[in-house]
Image 1: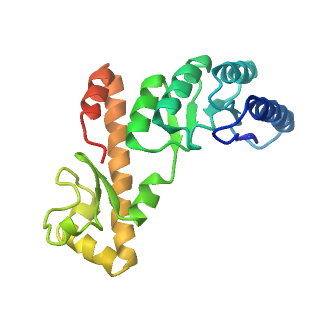
Image 2 (image 1 turned 180 degrees about the vertical axis):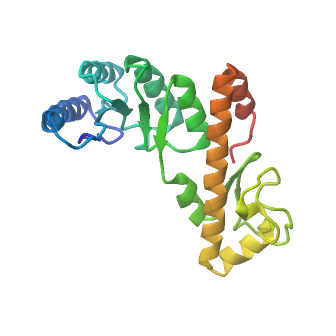
Length: 229
C-alpha cells in the first residue's frame, strides 16, 4: 500500500484537499521507487477525499491513470456510518478499473461487506471478527448475539445451529462459552474468534457462488432480511 493521508470525519474542505494532494504526492514517490525494483510487490494506490464525492472522483481518476496492480478506497471507516460508506463506495468503485482488484480498507461488518460487494469491491480487511469475539459478540445466520448476556447462562445450543466450525461442535454450548467469558478464560475469545472467522469465510464463499450463478441480487436481498443485532 502506498502511503496516504486518511482525513478524519468530519473534516473541512481544506483538510480533505490537503489529504488528497499529499496522498497523490506520496503515491508518485512510491511508483518511482518501485520502477526497476527487483522486488515483485503489487503496489496499490489509495483513493482519499472523505465524503466529498468530487474529490473522490479526482483522486480516483489520478490513480486510474497510473495503471497500478490494484486500487484501494480508504477513509470510509472513520466514523461516517453505513449510509456514507455506501454513498462513497458506490460512487468511487466504478471509477476504478474493473479488471484490477478493488479493495475497501478497514470495513468489516457483514452488512457493510455485502453492500460493498454489490458496488464492485473485491477485497476487504478488518479486525471486527476477532475484536468483537473478544468482547463476546458472535456473528450467526440469524444476526449477532452477545454471549456474555445472562440469557445464555443455561443455553445448551451451539453458537449457531447452522454452523459446522470447530467452536460449534459438541461440548461448546452458549452456556459453556458464557461461563468462560464470566471466568475471564482466554478460551472464550479463542472459540468465538474461530467461529466468527469461519462465519466470514462462509459468507464470502456464498457471495462468490451467488455472483458466479448470477444471483447476487437475490442473495443480497435475502441477507438484508437477517436481523443485525
